[in-house]
Image (cartoon, rainbow, N blue to C red; front, side, top):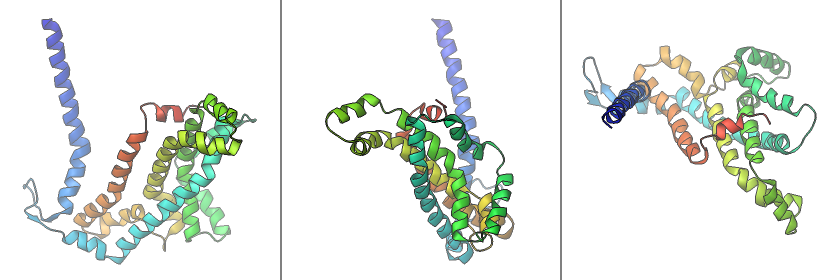
Amino acid sequence: MKWYLQSLGKRKIIELIVLIVFMIFFVGPLLNLVLLAFSGKWQYPALYPEIWSFKWWEFVFSNSNLSRSMILSFEFAPIVTFLSIIICVPAAYAFARIKFPFRQWFLFSFLLTNAFPKMGLYVSIAVLFYKFGLMDTFVGVILIQLVNTLMFMTWIPASAFRSVHKAQEEAAHDAGANGLKVFFSVTLPMALPGILVASIFAFLASLDEAQGTLMVGTPDFITMPVIMYSLVTDYPGTAGAVFSILLTLPSIILLLVARRFLGSNAMANGFQMK
């Protein structure tokens, strides 16, 4: 009994150490950003700002380049997410329910966009865009950002559709419902949590996309992640902290929302090829 209590005490100490390390490396930088964003004066060795101020928030929102990049980011992300739902959800249903030749290879191809460094892919796409007049256009940026959403919007909904038991659909058929009604009244509602989770990841992928947007959208379509490159050298560090919070906050909120729908093995099931 004494040995068990000692081992339990050691385990608690280890868990506490792991928690402290996590707080330092994850929460620490976020806390530093928040403090820096609201600081009017903060010099070493002070542990917190000596003067609190909103002047850097006013600076960011009054700067035309920064404010326009925020507007563009939150224009592109919903449009890209909506288009990826329209394009990928029917494909996900086909991968989950229809047996056709090379089905697994086609499904695997959606993973390739995220399996390798994307710069080579973006260069190839940019060459095609140049030929078709899509460089530095709104449509071109949307298309390049869609590349980042294909994996999430295909693999996760396909897993969600596979998890719907056919017995439930057959029961609806026996009750007199046709195929379309069964899909919208049984299949789609049961797969909806997975589709919502995939949509959240697609939104975040679009919101955080920088390399492709930089290559295709410059100079007229500069989004928040792209302008972050210039914030390091062209703007004060406190303005960069404000901008980082504005870019990070939607990600944190949406990931907390996704946690309500995402089970412990949902992502693992989403990336299984069956």
